[in-house]
Length: 507
Image (tube, rainbow, N blue to C red):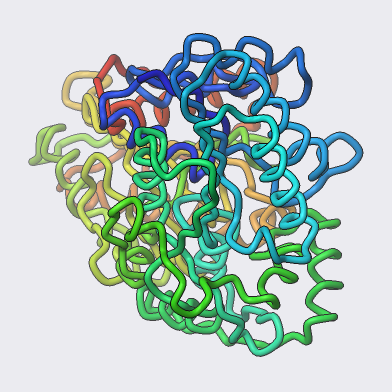
């Protein structure tokens, strides 16, 4: 089966594409940057450049497809172009018409739990989109209404986890006890793949949610146990929360929910008592318990690339040319790989601070690190090759970029150990922090790591620990951004349902 998927690079869409590929189907990805977006899958996904923004942009997208899975939508507006009406309503109508024109057998639309009763602008738009599906889609249509979805990069639970890791205080909307029923993204992805494959149910809407009802307060308590951090929860009256949220959005700062989501939270986003849950009752998915899902999420946040940061791109190098060591270059590299956590004092960097997290560096491992005044941050090992380790920062870190540990022999009798970082501040707040304390702490940390390697190697470095800092601009900055993105995409391809390795590159 060939399936046209919209929103396939988002949290929900990617999970659905992965499950469609695992089931042996092929996917056509509809997005503006489709040619680049499909790079994260090794095979089975073909690009179709376009969008649901106009009749011309969607024309021909469903040609030759057996089914359409429409996930794309917005949860917040950015007028005048990006509005609920333009994207969620009109865009869905266009895609439904295209599916009917192309003779598609199955049309699955991803709506939202409570769309038929909610008063938020988002929910009203999703319900209007449901009406468009009923009017315009091919006969084999189905509407799926999931509850709040959490997974790597979602806009609520993932962001809340980052706040728990990095902030001493977290605001709560009201008492923080408003109920909602989140569903783990991989469970939803499997359910959507099955919805596409099957011919039943048809011509109806089904509600779907996770197995447990929770609240913001309970989520923070669960995350505190997972991360071993205990931020203070401060209740904020609902009207002040809406005002404060709007102010933070205007200034460009992240907040776990926007005004529309506050409205939905106050309404209660749960299945009615005794209602059927399509996750289990229709699609036969065994639901992931909330605690297990949060533990998975803790190690699965997406990478924060240099191109996504704020301000200038900085390259920092710290190295020592070691002579007279009793160790070989391979042994020095293995020491770094297995003992990184002890190469800097705990006052500067502590590796593996959350229960069950990695300490030795393995390809694919996520390392959780404690940094003074910054809480817990994470990096993922994307590549180990030729005595070089490439690690990329994950969301929630004060920096967006990559760190490389490299052991080489530039001349006979000399072993060079080098730490090289390519970073931008993640946002405006971190830009201020990194220009002050952050820059000093980063320099002290990496100098300490290089000095420890030098000492443990048993050798000496006539020039001691050397360092260099450069601000990259123009093509130099672009080359680094492209390199880091390719490392990440290669890692994702190798871990995709049709994973396949290919060559390496370096800077």
